[in-house]
Length: 253
Figure 1 (cartoon, rainbow, N blue to C red):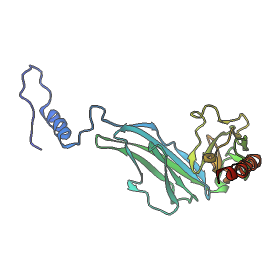
Figure 2 (cartoon, helix red, strand yellow):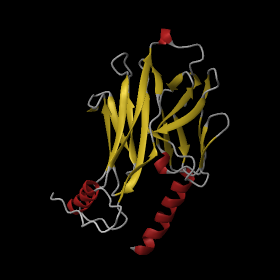
Figure 3 (cartoon, rainbow, N blue to C red):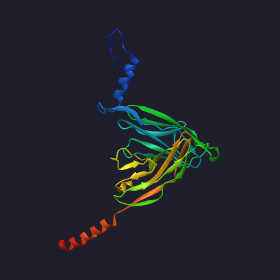
């Protein structure tokens, strides 16, 4: 692109090269209106210490206009392995890099989340450490009780149990279908109890799925075994529906 720096008319001119590059780039980019903005992270991945044979998940979300694309790298190269899975958020805001089962030392590395769009690019790095069971410090989290398979009638309350121990006491979070459970944007319908259990009120069909509880403290992170939540229609509602059909159909024929 040719130098299109404007003529200098002030006693304190801006650096010509900087002006030229900026205007060049704007001419080469497609027009997205005044709202076009470079990527900005909403959530960046945290360093994690996992146990061999276990799970590690890194979360990365970004905003921008156009919506940024998220790419995951390991040691500077795009992740590519059957044990590595990238799960996209439904709203397109980012993704989760899930590694399972963990292997030491091959999985120990610096991982990078890169968010980019036509306006710019930004990145964040995180470190994964993987320990064998015989290397775990005494305070490493333990799942004392994980969630169990549950079948609940639709519109009823479902509670997925979880209890964990460690030193210090671990924080408990939840994943559904390998994505973090959002307990804030659902009008209080889905909430985590003080015990660590996940309570789902007025359960709906989209609540069905595979749930995991995750215990984390300063020593590391441990995942529970996954458990499925299934929903069934209320038998009373089904009976009323078929009675309605039985009564209504003769009148329509």
